Length: 225
Image (cartoon, rainbow, N blue to C red; front, side):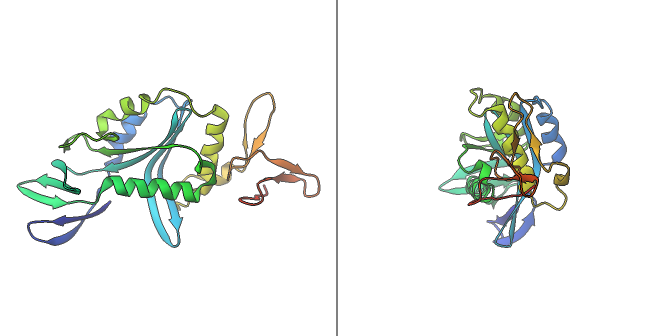
């Protein structure tokens, strides 16, 4: 997911830092689907530049942004540099903390519904990577479920979770992403039987003139459905 520079040869080589999809997906299957809403390969476009978030997990315990790295060998963090040690050589790798920080900020900027919600970043290296440091939020893939479930104090209502999830669905710019046309409006099943805007999460109002749902958040959204 970035460029790795060989310190010994001072050359650049494009090496994928994406974690193999199957193992991580296998771990995430252990999350209760009624409590955790999962989006993968979430695409964000900003000023012509595209960024992909490997996983976004929405739950009442918080929103998790997962940045995965498939880098074998030993990963070290020293003097502000991130280094991969493998086969007797040392390679300078992209700062995963800064990369994830930028993804979180971009998500908050582009998706109104999560602007004021605390986002929990998690950086995952594959199971065979040896992490030569101890930093909160950076783990090996087998630890992902335990890490997510360590956040066990509800902070978001179930209704709000569903609003955020559908807002994310409609903001996903990935051509190969979810078919959001199937979710024009999310109906929350409760006593009030309310509808919520899939873009910003506000309660929708019914327009008597246009006979349609209208988002009252005209300054930031103003969607008509």
